[in-house]
Image (spheres, rainbow, N blue to C red):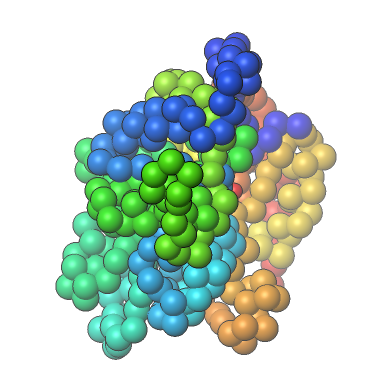
Length: 376
Ligand SMILES: *Cc1c(COP(=O)(O)O)cnc(C)c1O
């Protein structure tokens, strides 16, 4: 099976992990700061805090912004953790509809804020598939209405928006190091920022809210967690980051091939990356035309049976029964259609152009077989 995304583990990674395992200190050592420093340099920010997942990173990001009993505006086309972590921090989540590229619609965000901008604790955007949101427009809204911005850039380590690295422009940027994401530390994540106070708060909460005073004496000044990332994981992360740009180049090569082959086909559209952006190409989404919506299950199964590890990103968060119980039925038209249309096909540095050609041929073959049309 060719997975939709895949980690790259080479001999250097294995050596780095083995060496770290032989160290005296397995967690709480120097590798943590070393990884954080490397992330700061790569992303172009002053501060970073690595954590045991992006979910933990989101949780502490929301806590640091004091969103409790306030509203968090976010996108439904994301992994559940984006909204879940806001709930964990005591916020109420409100979903804003997306555009045809799967990113939050900045115009709908503006309409929402124009109607009422009171009691909003934060906005959290997601750079879907690695393609940056329209950051200038979103930042100017945040400034106008004085609202903090979290950029859940879990897909987008290495992505660029107008010569700046994605994740560096919001108050807080979030990355995930789960194996399907641009780099991996097994499990892992990070918060990056230029705001010292926010990162200090997040670092305190990462480790129980306890800080050392002197000798054996410590104080606990906040209710924190154990969200630390081990030194062994950081050793892997340091090595992964060194080869990130090379991995992104390979993803770009596969994605460019698809872009070209899929131009003006009769079955689906793809997402164009604007010329002032560069995408990490974490996912390669294809968006089926409406006449295929009713046959998506058959198409999905046929692709899996052909050894093509497709996936759907994402079921809108408000469609989960937990959220239905919480907020009742929510319906956002574009998010709903995006979910009906989207299929992520394999695109990563572990596959060859030959694989991509095979996938392209199979996708066309299967869609041709299923071009019966749905009643819509
Ligand atoms: C993967 C992902 C997360 C969660 O990452 P973990 O490291 O698995 O906790 C959060 N948000 C988005 C957009 C993601 O893709």
